[in-house]
Image (cartoon, rainbow, N blue to C red; front, side):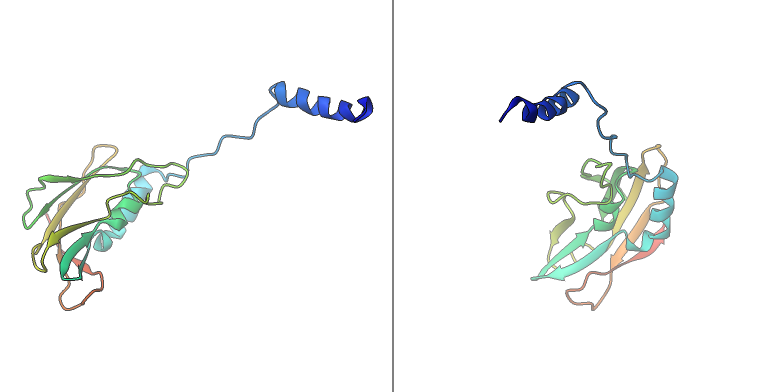
Amino acid sequence: MNLKQMKPLAVVATILLSGAPAQAEQQSRVMPLEQVKSILESTKDNWIAFRIYDGRQYYYVTHLLSWRCGIKQVRYSENSDALDKSWPLPACNKLIPNNIPSDAKIHNKPGKPGTVRTLAIQLEYDDGTTSPVRVYEPCEGVGEATCGYLKEEK
């Protein structure tokens, strides 16, 4: 390589090392909290799904995990409205806020079918407000399909 060929490379190196403008920082894709609350309220029938699989009962909170950016805490209880447990929420990834990480806990497997007759849930949002306590029951006779319904709000 001769000197004339090296000159363009030196210019490029100088630009790269001189602090030329970098690409713009990627922006958060998290919706404003009021929009997250509105979506969760309008989809409250889908917060919980129950399933019988391989002789065991499961319940899923996948929908809530999808909207966790905006949720500070998920309190819940099985077969009562004590709200004595807290569901672990993965950190919010602001670039892909509705993505559920592969290591997230998406379900509980409490035992044989009928072990959990009701599941009470209350959300605490990032601003400290809370949802009503909502009580869900498994759908009957759906086999291995996932299904739950909102029985009551308190």
